[in-house]
Length: 272
Image (cartoon, rainbow, N blue to C red; front, side, top):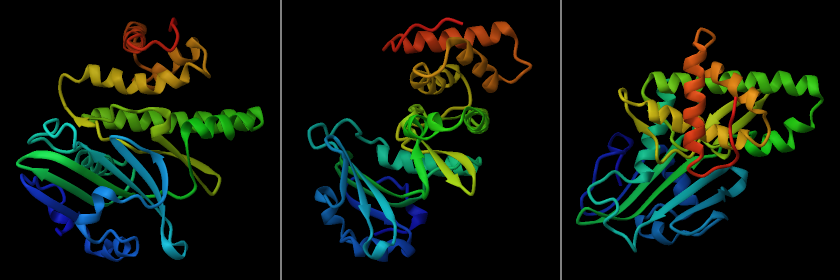
């Protein structure tokens, strides 16, 4: 068992379980202190199951909730041969986002099992963010049921925060690459609403030649937005990202590049 300082050190063969010492007691309470049980751990509510299994685990004595995610590569052990696991990449991305001021998750523990460089299992445990709801659920179940004036105020505030987060990430060369509405939490705290980024195992850092990555992130948001906003509204949102000084040609190019990206799996046609 390694300390947090070696959280992302690569292991060629064998098993590693990395966590900060202060979290050992937490893992003991849910019988995860031994690396041997991680590949078969099945406690809690099943949120997804298959190659990627995600469990929502309530801690004893109402001490909160954690999320356990396990990636299994038993049938394709060569996929991450000598490569960083998705679990490790996700945890690294959380740290990178935090460093530039983007709200995200805390990693409690990271587990990997390899055989001569071939990845068999990789797991990550993260903490639950209190008073949160996925953006897609928040939009339909909360926001759309508010009085129009209140809805517009809150929507504009969330939109400003979210696009500022995206601009900040992109200026720093950070890309989520799965920025769907379900991967953004909305946290309600004393009358304010704030976006939190989650679930980013595909995220990447690239400072140059990254225009396509910018399009990919914005396309993730646009796919669901097409169900609720007009094309003109979406076009105006381009300026939330580019800034008010952006030229019309620049905005149109980005708009149509997003449309081309979405047309690989078309939701509906985009026209400004």
